[in-house]
Length: 248
Image 1 (cartoon, one colour):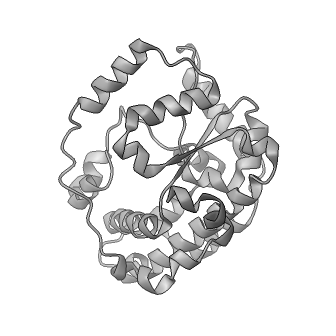
Image 2 (tube, rainbow, N blue to C red):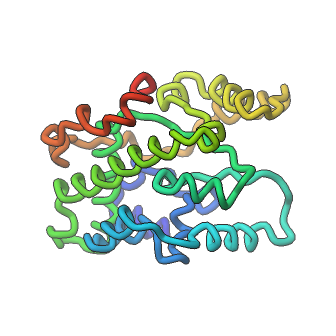
């Protein structure tokens, strides 16, 4: 399937590392609950997106847990490492479902996030709907991405006003994951009281120094094409920026 995606729209290779042996996002799990941003990114459907962003989907982490139980059945024991930006919509439900969860929130300037993700979504839709302009219009996609992440970042910031939620989260600047990846991981481990061994540091160093398979070049996009300059993003998301602006 991944080969088919990249063959249909080669620029996808510059946007994401497509490998069936690599980690995937929890958005894949939540498709089984019929509550996943993957449906929107592939098919559009504005009413579905409104429901996904503004309504609560009860039981979503029951489904999530069932998938994890299936995957680890008769498998190795250890700590799961999971990733999904839409979890920002439901930090309270996440932490209620997994009382021992340790959450890392990575912070990057939304003005950069919006066009990057919009570019990926447009490319994904071009696989299924080539030549259908109403589903691949860049400004419409850009506005939909902004609507999602403005709500997600503000809602997560409100959730973190609860000290019991806030203490379970480690904040990381995206720029630090690029400039000092090993130091950033060490800080995360220290934050959660996990042991950071010399053997683990050596494994990290080998990983960081290993060239990743070529992704076909750098992901390039024009923010103006997706309507970003007109969105005035730097003056939006006031609660989020007031607390985390220094990390952007």
